[in-house]
Length: 98
Image 1: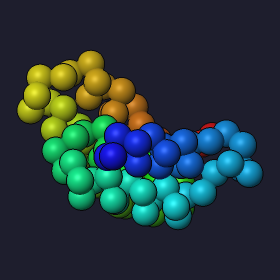
Image 2 (image 1 turned 180 degrees about the horizontal axis):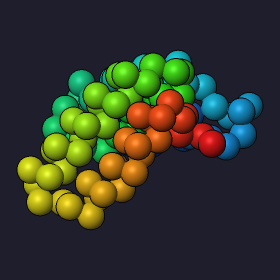
Image 3 (image 1 turned 30 degrees about the vertical axis):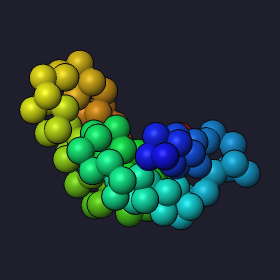
Image 4 (image 1 turned 90 degrees about the horizontal axis):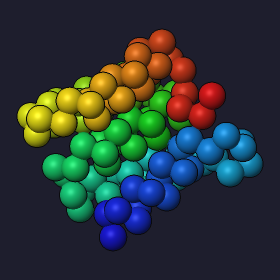
């Protein structure tokens, strides 16, 4: 269930077509996924993207940093680098659907 919610939230937050994007719904779905699976860094990354999609960049940065820390604790350095790239976008207040 968490994986399906996360996938839908990611698509809604990052869709290049504005007609298919719904950041508010993405936040809701990502928060629900996170409640179901709080230790999954990719759900934190999705929540960060959803926050950024609705202009909540401080929360996006926080969620993305949490995901990075989780990945690093697990020794997943390459994935943490990808998260860091997205973090830089959120620090510059760039939404994930550019």
